[in-house]
Structures are given as structure tokens and as C-alpha cells.
Length: 164
Image (cartoon, rainbow, N blue to C red):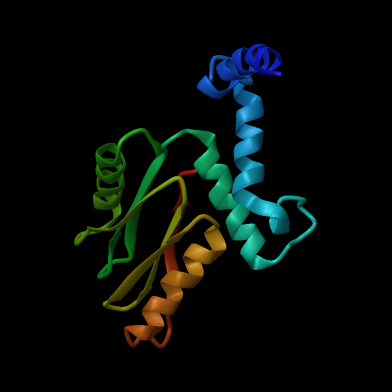
């Protein structure tokens, strides 16, 4: 019995050490999405807000890419600038500000984001922002923060998504 176990151990040992070739990148990405979404959202039949947000989050996370975006806004004249799909956060911030100063006199960088969406809401001098993996959720967050800050007529001033 002892001699029969030795060949089995010698065969299984390389499996445990990771010497078996790995799967293709496409297969790994598919596994990442399935594992990230879990059994509740992984079959795409569940269309709740939770699963919509989770799927967007997982797609961004499993893509392996890092895309940056930013939004700058000028409250006095409602000018704005945005950027998306930058490899660096510095590049995203600079482009948003460069675009804003063309239309606004008091531009300020309000938000930057990675592999997701951002939105800026405003009501006069009240300016707030929100980020999320789904555009609508980023906008909801920005509007909610604007109302919390005392805004009565809050509206989305700008939005952008960097995950595409």
C-alpha cells in the first residue's frame, strides 16, 4: 500500500505547486466575472439595482485596465470640462481643467475617478459630486449630496464615464 501511494503523490505534487499550465486570459476573465458577480447576479436574469451596479463594478475590475476620468466645474458661469479614458490620473485632471477654462472663469476640479462614472450637480453656488460604476447612480449621488448641502433646484451640471 505504501508503494502505491508514492506514484499518486508524485503525480499530484506538481498540481499543488502550480506547474500545470494556466488557462487562457479569456477564460480567466470569465472566471473573474463569474466569481465577482456571485450566484445571485451571475446568471444575468436578476435586473435589480444591486446586480446592475455589481455587474458594472465587476466588469471594470476584471478588465485589468485602469481608465481615469475627471470633471471640473465653474459655478459662476456654469462652465465645465471633463476627461475620460486616461492612463494616468494626472492626465485626466489636466484635460478636465484645460477644457473647463475655455468655458468657465472659476474652474475647480470637483472629482476624478477610475474605471467608473462621475457626476457634478449644482444649484447656484452649491456644487457637489458623486461617483459610481453606473452613470445613473453617480448622478443620483451628486444630486443627493446637493440636496443635503441645501440645494433646492439641484441639477446635473456634467457627467463622464471612464470605464469604456
